[in-house]
Length: 262
Image 1 (cartoon, rainbow, N blue to C red):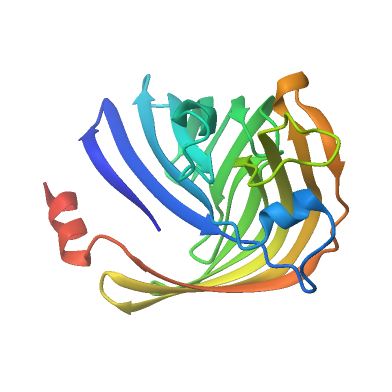
Image 2: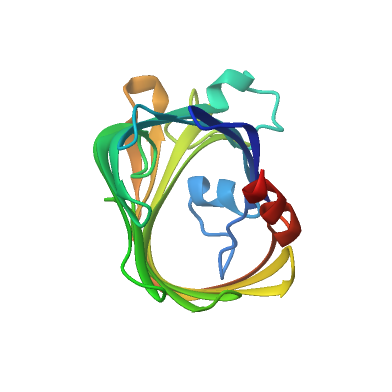
C-alpha cells in the first residue's frame, strides 16, 4: 500500500508527502531446512513502514533542484527484543537538473540508500524525455530505466528494468549454534526486475496495473551487525518469473481540469 499527497504546490516550490507499507514472507518448499537462520525466516512477517518527503525547487526557467528524504522501519519490529531505532533505515536523494523543454529534462546527483542491499552512496543520472505523442523514457540510472508507450490517453505500456533492495533487521527466536550471544541479524536482499507493465483506466480515477517479468537475485545474505556487519550467510538464489496485479487511484480528471484553469 502506498500513496502520495501534494502538501505544497506553488510555481517556486512543490512538496509531496509519501507513505508506504509492505509485508513479505518467505516459505521454503521443504521445511524445516535444517539450518537455523533459514528456519528463522519461515513464515516470518517482514514489514516495511515508511514515509518520505520530496521537494522540487525551480531556480529559474531552466534549472531546478530536487531533494528527497525517506525513513523506513524494516524488519519484524513487532518484537520487543530490540529498540525501534534498530529497525530504522534512512535514505536521501539530491538531484541538480535542467528542464530543456516541456518534454525533456535531465539531471545529475547522488543517492544514499539501500537499493543495493547495504547502505551506500552512488551517483544518479535522471533522464526524462518524450519524443512524440507515443514514445518516451523515464529513468534514474542506475536504479531504473523505463520506456513508455502511450497506447491511448487511458492506456499505457512500460518496459525496462528496476533494482529493488531491502534491508531487514530480524530478531532470533532461538540461539544459533556456535553463536549463543547472537540476538539478531541483518538480511540484505537485492534483485533486478526486468519487466513489462500495462496500466489502464477503469473508471476516471480508478486504474488497473498488470506487470510481469523476470526477477534476477543478486544478493540474499545475512550479516552480524555487532562486528562491523560481518557476513554470516552467503546465499545463491535462482531467478524466477513473476507477475502482479494492482489497483490504484489517481486524481479525478475534473480536478485536474480545475487546477489547470486556475
